[in-house]
Each structure stands twice: as C-alpha cells, then as structure tokens.
Image 1 (cartoon, rainbow, N blue to C red):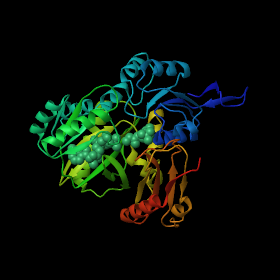
Image 2 (tube, rainbow, N blue to C red):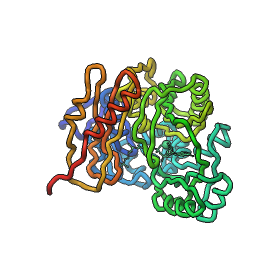
Image 3 (cartoon, protein in one colour):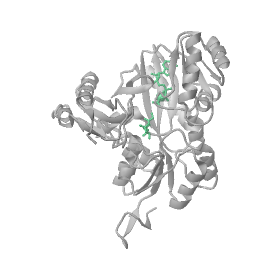
Image 4 (cartoon, rainbow, N blue to C red):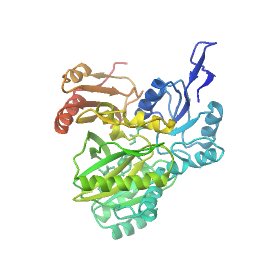
Length: 407
Ligand SMILES: Nc1ncnc2c1ncn2[C@@H]1O[C@H](COP(=O)(O)OP(=O)(O)OP(=O)(O)O)[C@@H](O)[C@H]1O
Ligand SMILES: NCC(=O)N[C@@H]1O[C@H](COP(=O)([O-])[O-])[C@@H](O)[C@H]1O
Ligand SMILES: [Mg+2]
C-alpha cells in the first residue's frame, strides 16, 4: 500500500509516496541491482552492511553500518526504519533475531526459516537430502580434525571440505589425501564466517556441467528462468551463461527438485537453486533464497532480470512472462591486490567490443576497497550463441584492469 513518508534524503518539507519500504541486510553488488530495481518501481530502500559506502548504499535512500551477525544492532535498525520487507542479501546474518522479528510480524524475505536453513550448509543439506529426499552428493559433518578424517573415510577421496557458514567458495578446498583432509579442515575453520567451527565433508562429484536454476515463488505459483550454466574456480564463479544446454528430461528433473524445495521452504521471492549435472542426473548442491551471483547474466539476457523478479515476487506483482532476449553471458572482473586508491582502465575498450548484434555492457560495483580475488565488476554480453557470448564477455572482462592510483 502506498503511504506518505518524510525521507531524510529529500528536501525538507517534501513528502514522497513510496510503494513499499525495503531493508537490505547486506549491500553488495546483488543488493545494489535489487535496490535499483526497487527504486525504479518507486520503493524506498535502506541498505545495511558491515562497511560504509557498500555498493547498494550508493543507490539507497538511507543506510546503516553494522555487522549482520550483531542481533541487537539488527533489531535496532529494523525498529528505527520500520521496513515493510526485510531482505537478506548475504548468508551470514543473525537468523535467531530474524526469526524473533518474524514472530513479531515483521516480514522477512522469503522467510526467517529459509534464511536460517540456508545460512548453514548443514541446515539446507539435511533439509534437502533427509527431509525432502532430493539427490545430493554423499556428506558428513565434522567439528575436529579427527572427525574430518573419519568423515572422509565415509564419503571417500577426493572430497570437498567447506565451512558450514561461508559463501563464494571461502574456506573451501578439495582433499585428495588424508593429509589434505587435515589441512583442508584447518583452512575451512580459519576462513569460516560466524562462530560455529564446523565443516561439511562432501563426496567429490565428477559432473559434466553445473547450473543455477532461478526459481520464482510468486503469488500465482512457481516460475522458472532458463537454466544458467557456470564455471567456477576455487569455489567462486568466473563466467555464467544462459541458456545452459540440458536434455529436456534432466531439466524437468531439476525443475521438479527446485519446485519441491522452494515450496517446502515457503515464502515469496526468487531462489537460485544449484545443481551438478552428471549424465542424466541432476544432483542438488545448494540454494540461495535470493538472487544468485551467476544470475547477473540476466541483467543482459532476460526481462525481468533476477532482481526485478525477486522484487515483483515479494510485492505480489506479476512475474510472467519472463522474456529471454538471446544467448547471454557474464564474466567477472576480479581485483589482484588489496588497495583503497585505484581506478578502472580499459572501460572504453571493453564497451567497444559491443555491436548491434552482440551488445556488451559492464557493471562496476563501486566497492571502496580491493582485496586479492575480490569481485569488483562484471562484463555482460549477448550474442547469437552462448559460446560467442561467453567469449565476448570474457574479452570485455579482461579488457578492464584495476590500476593503483598515485597517493
Ligand atoms: N561436492 C562437490 N563436488 C564437486 N565440486 C564441488 C562440490 N561442491 C562444490 N563444488 C564446486 O565448488 C563450487 C562452489 O561450491 P558451493 O556452491 O557449495 O560454494 P559456495 O561457497 O556456497 O559458493 P556460492 O556462494 O558462490 O554459491 C561449486 O559450484 C562447484 O563448482
Ligand atoms: N556468492 C554470494 C555473492 O556473490 N554475494 C554477493 O557478494 C557480496 C559480498 O561481496 P564482498 O565479499 O566483495 O564484500 C554480497 O553482498 C552479495 O552481493
Ligand atoms: Mg554455490
């Protein structure tokens, strides 16, 4: 419902009419695109993150800086801004506070339970495999080096070891020997987010490809976007493309599994459901109850894009038809070193790769600091085939370099 609100960022005395007020918990590149979509539909956005100047804060109406794991600060921000919708944007959030807020009738997207289950790999994996019977890799959990060795004995070598609380591949490694398992356990604990020293030890899947199936739970039921293929290095994505080529029976299987888990989690919004494709099997890996990084390809390949779909689903607005604009790809632009004074070179060269038939675009996220391997931007391309789109996007991403600025 529209309502009048005096906005601090507008001139004194002006009353704006907002469609709804969102609070983003996490304000990175994904939150920034969501905030842009929300602003385009006349919504108000409060962006929260652990550091000032985060990407979504630059396009929001207001911002708050605190750790999303600080429950008291989270509650204070909610009570101060009184959002209609609280939208988790990262995994590591004090979900006990989210659950308490939901109990007091605040709306958490898609639900506090979905945020709680997906924040920890043990939560979502046990829910998917043990409660819903989805196909997953073999797995065990471990809280000590010895337990990790024992777990590897059960799931077999090689295995993949990840902190239960982490994302974008942080703390993740593949162990090929028992010595590796010991090293991988300590690496995972060192890099984990949150305060639970626990890892998942997963059977290594020799997959043919992997996909993200963007699945929208909307007022009129479940909708699927064309599957997105992606390539990962060190647990973090490098290129994604849409549509991924899949046998109809495998796509249908993945869609059934995605519909099962999204319906069981409940709530409205867009989910990124990840699968490994091995032969004719779609093996469930994990799920984000929010837009997915590999889904940034929809910024050029699809309308509405994944951020607009999340927004529309939350607001109970129509999400279909979902138009596909042509074979598309995204490729990431990563920083090499840590720094606070830097500039992007080669932007003109990257954009010059675009033609009328094969448009090329960039998103530079505006993160205030570089770190080794930190994603600072993404190149987008559309072409007559996904191969050509990936090649164009990769060339555009490589054309952009991050140079140190003189002090
Ligand atoms: N059991 C496995 N077998 C083979 N490869 C795996 C396995 N688990 C993970 N990987 C590889 O590592 C990538 C990242 O794993 P996963 O999605 O679990 O990590 P993440 O930290 O949650 O990443 P993100 O937050 O980007 O989704 C996968 O996309 C896949 O390429
Ligand atoms: N796979 C999850 C993912 O892509 N999350 C995105 O990365 C940001 C954190 O970036 P940072 O670590 O560079 O601050 C998050 O805020 C979100 O937008
Ligand atoms: Mg993943």
